Length: 430
Image 1 (cartoon, helix red, strand yellow):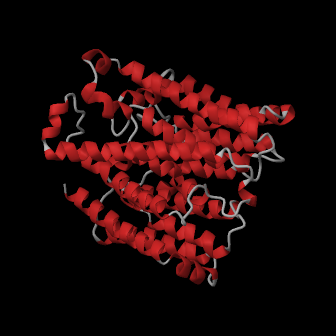
Image 2 (cartoon, rainbow, N blue to C red):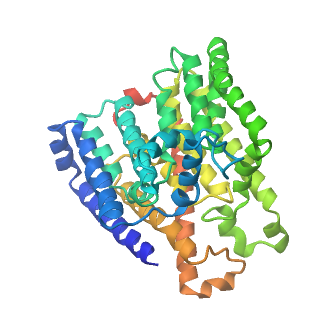
Image 3 (cartoon, rainbow, N blue to C red):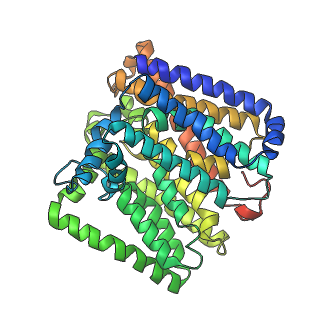
């Protein structure tokens, strides 16, 4: 349980720091107004690179969890010319290991994977800051970046866990300057994102593709970009690895994890419903698609003139927050998927209790995965199990995290009602 105590202490310390920043927000914003964007790089050095050096170089700890189990073996297999799915088990996209390989060629160590993920996050923060320049002052936008770097969940997921989730948002960002006038190139970028991340990236491609249909010529070019990069890779992998290409990625959805609607409902389910894992797996996917399509419909009806840049943060947050609730293999790590666009496009720091709740959600989401794992990955099958204080506490944390996911999904859906584009809003947060 030592790692749980360490993550709890770090998360609480960061949370208290954030409360201080919120208390002195106007003063801090004024100070940031007199600096420059180098503050973001300074935060990365202080809150990412230095903790990395202390944790992995000075103290000599080795990465655990997905880094050791998946990322490093997949990356090393790619470095040696292996074929994913055939030569190494992979629940990620075909090219996932190949973008890690150049990093591992410099240092064949699991710690290099964590450093690579930190660099990905830094680039995502920089591009988010650059592309979402609203009518807020420089100091107000820098405050968002500083606030993000201090959040417990991104800190723990990036430095201690080396999670890759933020790369999905990075690929969404890379298509921003291309979509308005170069839809073919945007299709190539998002197609590469599909091939280099994981299968859930398709949940972003579907609404984007549907929304391009309003312009027939742009839709054809965008689809061509997706097909030209996607089909050859898919055919090659299928030729070399056969159905393993689909089976290994699909099998990941069979694992029962927490927190999600299945883990919360399990204590009151009948034996038959507990055994029907396929219903929960595919039913969750259907619910995700339904909510996502509702968001697409709202954009088409209310904001036909919105461009990719205007809707992508809200569709992104909506899709992955609701996915985190209804997929039976969802865990609180998934909040890391959308935390960056949430801070830059949906957070109004003038709403004190909203901001405090965001900090609390981050603390719980940062702690829960390790706590759940070290309690034996509990899946309660009766209400009497909560007579154990540890079980009751863990289940309460699950409830609060799921409520947070639902709340942010609702916020994203409500954001699609706004009459102004993000670039015109002041403040643009909901």
